[in-house]
Length: 517
Image 1 (cartoon, rainbow, N blue to C red):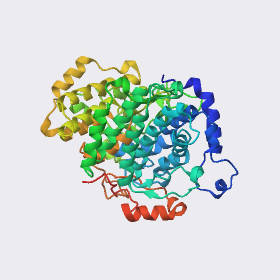
Image 2 (image 1 turned 120 degrees about the horizontal axis):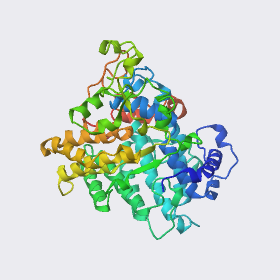
Image 3 (image 1 turned 90 degrees about the vertical axis):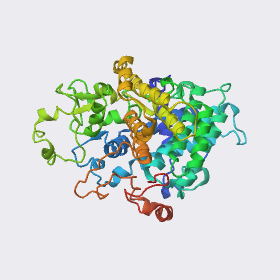
């Protein structure tokens, strides 16, 4: 169900076709192409679905820049001394901050918009057998757009990706306040369309292998995530959709985790983009980027302070010594102020890198887990939006978070005895639910840095200490968003200017709609 090897050749062929027939970037040359805007309707929708799933998982390009260089270190899961890891020090690099935008809008958003369009059951001549392809495409499109808006704020949404559908090559930036309600509506509609009696994409679905009920659970689990993101800014709407998600049926075990199992090639699109960043070489027992992306002292210290058995699975100390995290906000020179011995290569190997089993080129890419769902469910109960025992859902979430590592490798399993001991040492306290659930969510979303960063901004947990590196862009505060690509001011001046006027300056400190204090 999770393999991608069998469809690789077709995916490569499809990618070449899509680059020709679906490219909707803002160029005059593209407008002049004498092609039928509906040519993609002749392509098997299953191939487009598989390709967009791989595109959304991402290549080395955006996973290195958006995920690792920015989010992973801002959220203090990782730390890096190299100054080009700008997120560690709150510096600016336009190419890096533009990475997700460039990949999303140039690649998979337009392909997903096209897939939704060509499988639309309401269109004349539509094939009723495509209903599940259509519903799954709408669910995945909602996932993709939430990721983009959570990084930048107001973005092109309602008219995005429609260059060939309606010749709109310069779509407006839509307010996040309008995007979010549409995302949950899309999920509600799509979940209702799913029909197990109709054909499904089978192995062309790289996530659930065409399992319609798992897609339904994912749709409602994603609705729970999106609904809860609105908890501070639109509590009534948040409560409504959190309730709908729970009633609809969210994930119930780690078997429902949303992820793609990657392979080590033969081309980059099949590989895990984060794995490509680390590029582990078993022969040399090292990463290509061996001095970067070390686990953060904040994260390691938290695990150790809670007697967390995950530290033994996550932390890889090359010299075999105790787990030791690298502090954020230092460079190759200033690190001597923290550790005078760090300049020796042997000393560097005393620090915790991530266990290679999590970041191989063939590792899975995880998008949403059952553990996250359980923590959100517990929060819903604490807010009075659901019934049940928050403590029970906390325990289920912790257990799931510790068991979920087996999707990477069976050897990473944490024993029931260790989990029971952890829960005994770290019991649930309803009077402190915000901190407890926020910290557990942060721990459970390691490597899913999009979600870790977004939920931290929403909840404020864990309470991170920002760095104040010389020349930083934020006056020593953790960034609240990434800046728009510098080219947008010239390529789409009306949309860009309207977004800035509405949302605020295009800086790292401007908060988006749902990110309120």
